[in-house]
Amino acid sequence: MRLRALLGDYPGTTALKNGSIKSDLVSFDFADYSPTHKGFKPMVREAAFDVSELAIVTCLMAKSFGKPMVLLPDVVVARGQHGYAFYNAKKGTLTPSDLNGKRVGIRSFTTTTGAWLRGILANDYGVDLDSIDWVTFEDAHVAEFVDTTKRAPAGKQIVQMLLDGELDAILGEKVEHPDLRPLFADVAVEEKAWSAKHGSSPINHMVVVSADLSRNHPDVVREVHRLLRESAAAAPSAPRFSADEMRRSLQTITHYVAQQKLIPREFSVDDLFDDLTRALI
Image 1: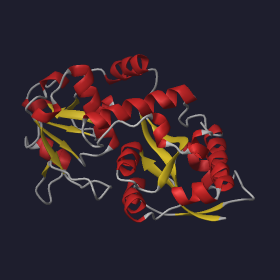
Image 2 (image 1 turned 180 degrees about the vertical axis):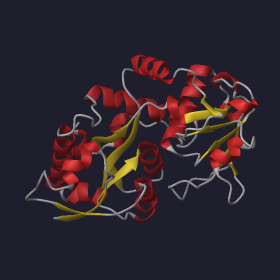
Image 3 (image 1 turned 90 degrees about the vertical axis):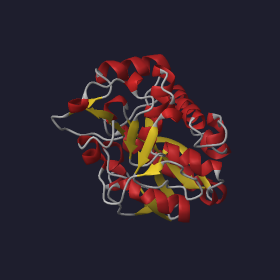
Image 4 (image 1 turned 120 degrees about the horizontal axis):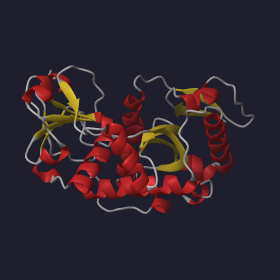
């Protein structure tokens, strides 16, 4: 069976995408989006792909609106989050606990990195997220979500707004500039402590399949999972999660996303899978 697929170029996907790992059952027509997250919107709005990489927050939001897709237990992007928050040191020192009432920029309020960082700020630093004046630049991948944040003026760029003093901090960006400093003073220490506390690392992107594919072609879905698993195993730097670590990470981000009212209720981890894909964990 030939499948429409969206999958970024990472160490853990290389063997699958270059054909080193083969299948007699399935083949892929890979869509070309750069960056890959540009393909998430057509996936959740138009069901454009049979198999798709998807940001986990987009996946959770899509589920809350009944989008016909099912999660596979395959992580393609995972990383520490603390290094993606910055402030302008020329305006004085800023710590995470200082953010109440500040003006904070983020590409979209529904980005996965943003949701992780807001969860960390709220739960580890006591930041009142509702007190922050959020400034965004893009809408959500999921069309049904109503975004009540303030939109940046047309033509404005997030990093330049921070440099110009129009923002107090930004989330979700990785930048190098002599005037900008990480919001978290020692990123490596913070990330290590967070992972030790939660028994896992933050997941950014996983893989979903269409509900129709899972319902009508279970053998194909199992084969897709096998290919993803073997491709990841061929790359030492690919994300490595035990079943328990994956569950803990998913439960944490689901809790954060429900706290932030991006979804109406907190799903259990098992809710994210169907009977077929749950058995693959």
